[in-house]
Length: 110
Image (cartoon, rainbow, N blue to C red; front, side, top):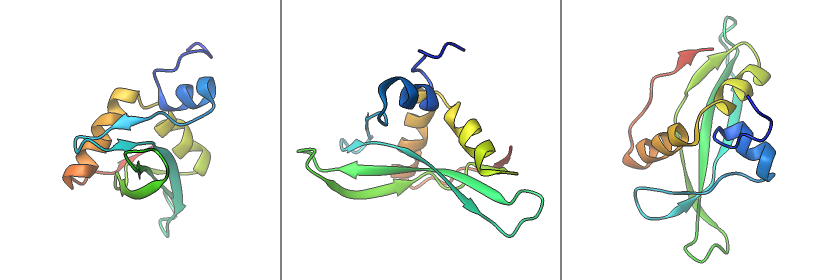
């Protein structure tokens, strides 16, 4: 994949040096970050998910957020970042819209 490809989450961050912006199904502006947390599961000690900060309509500040729920169980933080970074921006938008709707995705193994 080209270093200048901004169609994935990691590619967009690399090319533009900032997170992509999305309009949620609720009409509010959002950005996204990849998050990873340790778990007690020795077989997959990391869980990955997306956090979507919701911005004020004026763009002045963050007024809330939604989370995707656990999307990935993996062996390392870097694996979480690699797998979630490979999501297309269309997939990220779908996770945002599902999070706004209150739908919980199923976690998968990395």
